[in-house]
Image (tube, rainbow, N blue to C red; front, side, top):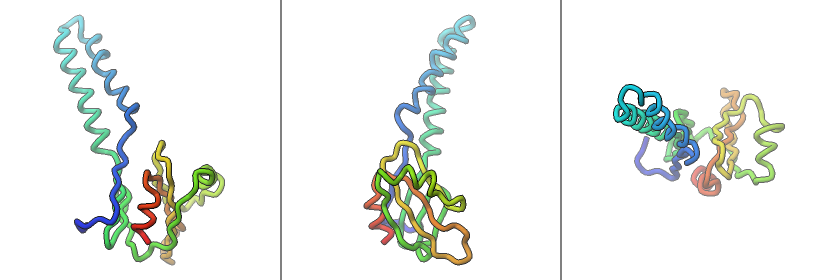
Amino acid sequence: MQQNLAFSEWQYPRISSFLPAILFVPAVWIVGAPFETNVGLLIGAALALVVVFMKLKNSRFIKVDGEFLLLGDAAIPRKIIGKVSAISKEEQFYERGARLDARAFVFLKYGLPEMVKIEIKDKNDPTPYLLVSTRRAKELEDALS
């Protein structure tokens, strides 16, 4: 992938999703208390840090450069991208539900306020469009146009 990105967005986890990781500390501390309280506290803290690291490492990215649209591990050549349109907040519910084509590539993340629909114009690909949630729909739309 080229270094000059037209668009880049990190879809980091919600802050509230880290609460269960923090609860590892007191849970392991209580379980380890009969043996050694300090070791239980250290193991709980280590487990919490590992979970936080894994959540951050496994969060997804959207990147657009001169040749590709990258959605996580998927690389879509820009030459097969058709019409790109931002979806209004009122229409998002229907696009994710009743209007969703079963063949569509869906790249949604809960809690992101905006959505973009990207048509695929490759005759050999059965995927009619991509449905992508984002924080910056207008910028993504501009980068792909």
